[in-house]
Image 1: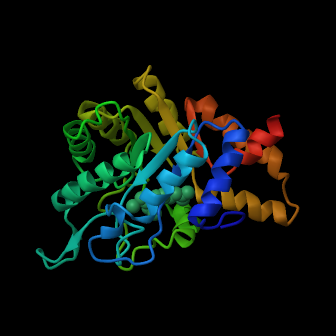
Image 2: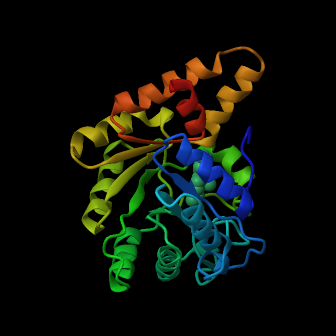
Length: 280
Ligand code: PBG
Ligand code: ZN
C-alpha cells in the first residue's frame, strides 16, 4: 500500500508523536501478530502486539486519542473476522462464539489504555456484547465506535495486503453488507447498533457510499458519524498521481470535502498527516 507500512512498537512511538504535533484528532491501531491461529488468540492476550502498541502510544503521546480496531481477521490463520468452526460442515463464522472472544479482546484493549474501541467485524449483537463486557469491568466511560454500515467491498484490497488479513477461503459476504442492498438496510444496521449502545457510527467505504453517509446523517442527527476513506480509495489516487494523471493534493482534498459535505463529522483517512500539512 503506497506510503504505508507496518510499524514496530518503537516506530509507532515516533509516529504518534508526529501525529500529535500535527494536531490530528487521533489514531486507530491495527495489530499484526507474529503468529496467527484458529481463534486469533493474539488479539486478546495481555502482551499482544496491539496491547503493547496502545501502551507505547499512550506513553509517547498521552493526550492523543488512541482507538483500537477490534476484529479477528489479522489474528486468525484463516483470515476471517470471527471464529470459524465446522459444526455445520461448511466452515462458517460462528457468530456467538465470536462474541465471547470479542468481549475478551475489548477488555484487554481497555486494560492496555485504549481511549475508544472500534469493532469492525459486523457480527450480530457485537455492540451489545462489547458494551456489557466493558461495563462489567468498570469501563462504562469507554466509548464504542461501531463500523455499523460496512460493505463487502473490493476497495479493501491494499489494506488486506498491508495487514496480511486476506481471507484464506471464501469471502466476507456472510457478515459484511451487500453493496447492492437497498439503502434501508444501512439504516437498520445503524438503528440496531445505536440500540445496543454504540456512541459513534461509521459508514465504510466512503466515496462509493456518499449516499449512505447522507442518508444516515439525516436520519440520525446528533449521532456522531464517521466515514472511512479506505485503502483502495486512497491507493487509486496515489497510482494515478504517480503517472502524473491527476494532482494528488487537489483530488484528495476534493474527495475528503465531499465526504464531510455528505454529512460525516469524523473522517478516517490515510491522508491525515498530509492534510494537516497541506492546510497549515
Ligand atoms: C476488517 C477490516 C477491513 C479494513 C479494516 N479492517 C476490511 C476487510 O478486510 O474486510 C479495511 C480498511 C481499508 O481498506 O482501508 N475488519
Ligand atoms: Zn475483520
